[in-house]
Length: 454
Image (cartoon, rainbow, N blue to C red; front, side, top):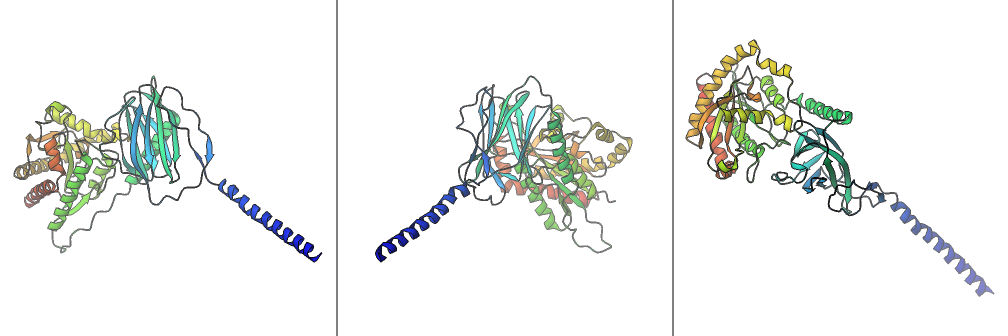
């Protein structure tokens, strides 16, 4: 009887234990169901004219937290004239905003806190409705992809899809033809919001390094603004392996280093990294720092590829309402459109009218004479170090040179469309030679008293 009672007690204990264990194990699936909801889609067929199917919500384990900024490490364009898809591969989820712009037709994708590790040559060749795209930093905390389209398009669908268990995502945009582009109120508001954010960032320029120490009786130290053109989403001209924005930034940094080593000048860089800087902010930096010389650095490119192997050499430009030749006029138009192509509106006609004012003309006469002097000195110094174009001293109506108070020049370092010259411009040895030649011209310029001190 005692044995039977003992067996009954043991059976009850085991049953109780199994019930507790079953309750614990049964809680595991419930906890897993509490993971973040994400949107995904079935395997992708080749793009067609059919409208994208709605995606279903599924539940997956929460991926590891993203460490550092999200990186965009690949991009692709697929499809045809009926439907074209741009896919951006990301290391994590992002917030994004899509809107269209007109004249020219573009689709803009703003993504928050993203860095790009995509090759600089990506986006040159389009497909279907996309003729090409550019990408890069745009404003603090914001990156931008600008999609150039072959004509008016409609954004048929956008998707942010989680891929795998490592937190990777893919951002997809499907574009379809449209008879015309009538921007919606939402798109116009997004464009205005984006521009406003950029202008807020412009309002606080980066401080310049302190001026070299000098005695109270010593002359004021000249302030020189070095302006590496383009940057961020604005890549500038494209070569066989590189892009303009990287070459001019490398030369600008080298020039800054050489000038600072002399101890004679205070150098202000309009950008020291791969950042987008609007044209108006570049001029504003020059004015706020009361610059005595403004040097904008660029790399030229020849659209006619059949002549690209024959045209090379550096050119120095000064401001003129009338271009010195047709080539100079086309180049100025291209450089002046940098903000427009990056998705930023150009200055209004009211701002343009300032250039034509009598006061500007009177003030610009003196500074333009000094700019012409520096142009001549730079051509002389550069001739002994690097190859110059056939007519190295030219003039055109560049927006960035419209500075009544400061002598300003724009230097096209060479032709990135010339394969051999591009290789030279990418080399550190050539960059040092160019920086040394420009520094020698600057020394000559200030040795003759060619400066404006206010």
